[in-house]
Length: 515
Ligand code: KIV
Ligand code: ZN
Image 1 (cartoon, rainbow, N blue to C red):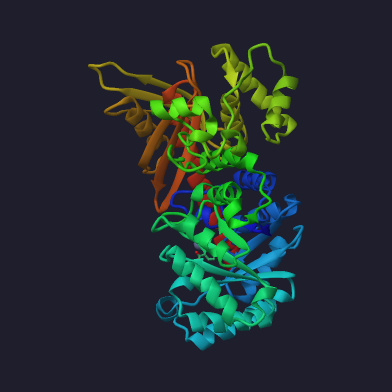
Image 2: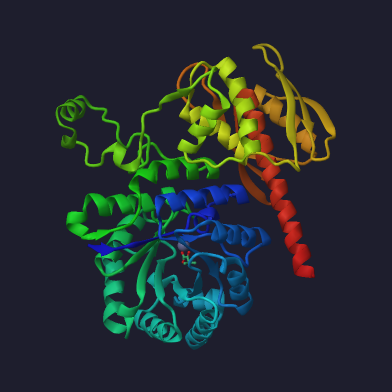
């Protein structure tokens, strides 16, 4: 069996999805989970892009022990220096350099000649090798590049010391056969190519990212790049969980394996979906809600007689569990902490204490606290607090079929000042959001609003996801409560707090740039 390295770029290419802005805590949690999933490489961000990215990459590199952590870098010495500062504390620092090689990009974007591109690539690889033992070099838009030029530049960067060569299908244009042929061409035309690792990086614009990645493996790639749930720019990246499960289920065909712990797939997928606010389509392969549901009578009959009639992947393989009732009103702090740890979350003593308060409040209103309820509370406690910004104190909403819906909201700002406002709207949520907008004293555009129940039953927790735009910043927010209006208010406040956080970070970056 050939070993295929899994390079996860959920925190870099995935975070480039429209409206996704993860904070440091959220990025760290995802990185910890990727480590549990046993990916080989985590691309934690683009250290030179902002102070926030730098901090996140640095902390992830220092936290993660059993995966290599990498960061993206342009071919600029200052980017490489910054990346080294962020990554040097990691278990196996590696750098990811990229420059475009297609005529379209070289002419219109870079405005460089092919010779200049080669020279810059070689110089930067040499420079990076002063620090990094492993240097990955990517030919952006490789799939629309001229193959002889691609072979030439790769020959030169290998000579300069690159150890991983990545062939991205940046715009999701290639077909499986053509992609496979590129790998074969390079293997036949680049001296010493067998000494480096060849990597595939596919985007999903034509819905072929996973199948293209698998074609690359068939033609000699030893590394595949992608994201959890396939999130990413535009139509997204190759979904890593689909590639890993395809390799596992069809090992007879691919004769290749990864080191992933497949049972961590569902948990990782849920975590990424919740933290990014990007929903998993119910029919999505491997992790969709319906991926293991057998609806038709004939299928159900077959599965009851013998599972393998219609089930090629067992839900247990990817860690899908039935929702278990775990705790109730009489459960103590110790039981709560144990369950939180079993669910894979690391909470400080203070966070556990706060969680316990919230848990008891919920247990008074809801008899059975399921794992899903607990995870929703953990998310609120761990990720949704922005102590420096707005906190919800209270809401009151009046609604009647023949009345104008009216809301009154009390918020506390970061300095502890109380803000109280009231407004009306066409419906209860609109009244609430109009009122909140008055409190924020800034126009907020609501781009999306979704509501779902955390578990079944009339007493279930409600979870609301919103997408908003404030000035030029687009971001998402989430809120959980037993009442749908309270959950709606929390989600809106959460999103606006994220906007303020991004604005604060931008201001800090500007200050640093001016110094
Ligand atoms: O899609 C792409 O080309 C990339 C590179 C930066 C590797 O993400
Ligand atoms: Zn990409």
